[in-house]
Length: 384
Image 1: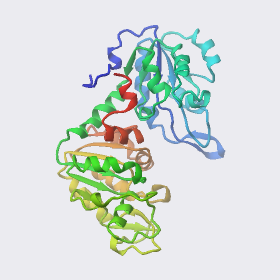
Image 2 (image 1 turned 90 degrees about the horizontal axis):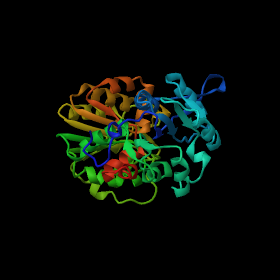
Image 3 (image 1 turned 180 degrees about the vertical axis):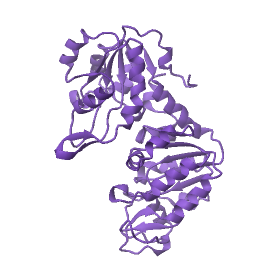
Image 4 (image 1 turned 30 degrees about the vertical axis):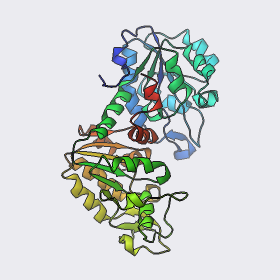
């Protein structure tokens, strides 16, 4: 049971025969495989959702899964539904009319996945009351199991809880509990932030400089701090617009890479002071990973979001090595961010992280960052 103000699914009472609207996150990467066939590249979010689906089946609920997908390859959830059906039996319906006809035939324990909400009706993203009512007619109970979408004020996230008895799913509750460790942390507490877009992550860095014993800023974010300190960053990715990072760059608890890799993955490491005007910083070097590994030996809690390098261009080694160091440490760890998960999955480390009792892997990317910055999400507040 969570200490939060919402009720959890295990407090819903008997669900036998009841119609449950389960908001899930099925927005998984879709890519072209061999022969040009579309396929699911990473099923991490699906795997995390499956226990809840099985729980509702055993409870005898008639479950309709509400979700969305945003992919350059497809706007339909059909492929994802077919993938889920390989793991546990579900039915896919492509419209509200089809759902209306199908819902009358559903038996206790049946699960149906409705087509992409954002494609079916613009009212989803507009948080339309009418669209929320349209969804609500298919349910007796609402369950939010989509932590990773719960920073969005959309109809299926904040509108539906106003219309139906509502509960937090076990995955959402677990996310909230694990991420909340950062607010009253075990110490020493290390916060590691990678990726890009300092303009959106600045409040998070400012907040955790007051809470963490060490804030390490890597990835493209570090380039802005290097520049703030008067160092050459060449052609490296930078934040858009002018941002005053002087207080952060000078903060004694803010650390940045001690060596960097530029231009090609097999390049020799350079000191930040050695970067030339033609260089493009793309990863941390081995000395940086050694430094972080030493910090992790005494840490009690580590919170990490975002890769340390541009993994899509082959700069993934520092992220992989850091993950191995986290697994070797005795610290409790919370890892998250879609790009971070992508690197761990590709390197074959994700399963090891998931099976490690000391490590919690969050499904959230932007939602994780928003929760850490604000202490809650609009979707979590809607369940109160």
